[in-house]
Length: 250
Ligand SMILES: C[S@@+](CC[C@H](N)C(=O)[O-])C[C@H]1O[C@@H](n2cnc3c(N)ncnc32)[C@H](O)[C@@H]1O
Image 1 (cartoon, helix red, strand yellow):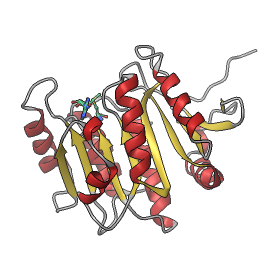
Image 2 (cartoon, rainbow, N blue to C red; image 1 turned 30 degrees about the vertical axis):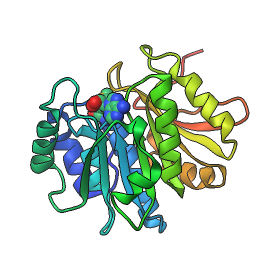
Image 3 (tube, helix red, strand yellow; image 1 turned 60 degrees about the horizontal axis):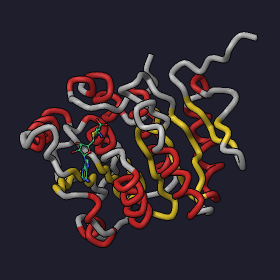
């Protein structure tokens, strides 16, 4: 059974609407991402949500349901793939399943051309507390999207990266590794395991001083999904949350 995030509106959408909206992220990852936002809200961490690669809105709508009053969901996509109708389908999904107040800001742009100041000007007054990076899976795109996301991030915020360890994009991890080497103040604190080859794994990254805070809270929230061995990042270990956290029988 899929876990719940603890945010009623997000959980209703993840249970009933999520799979009706075309997209690629898993329901498991959506529940964990929204729970991470709940944990932030409960601990006074405020800010916007942003997503590069909104597509038809599947994951973005879940995140938007986890926002607090005054916070905004900033959805960025060039909205040209697979055809120009994708932005209308995104807006229709939002009207049907999403928060229908003014919290969502849709921005049609090539993320590689965007600067953090431009992104933050879309919703002035706060930085981004949860940034989902799910655009094009190339070294060029991901390195620029990581730089943009980090430059817009709240100091206590989370960068969430899609399609990590995906068999179709084996070199993406090298781009993430280069980014982490350039930013030794950051750590992957959680690997959210895949559901299948389409709904692949995500990394969640924060500043080192907040790792224990996020890890402890997620372990408490999802005790039945903790994979006991953790993720070996050589210099440290990260939490692994898996839909089926089994170990090999030896
Ligand atoms: C895999 S889809 C995202 C799926 C969605 N986040 C989900 O979880 O269901 C990738 C999206 O990234 C968008 N994209 C690719 N390159 C981009 C760029 N340079 N700027 C903005 N959006 C981009 C594509 O248009 C596409 O909608």
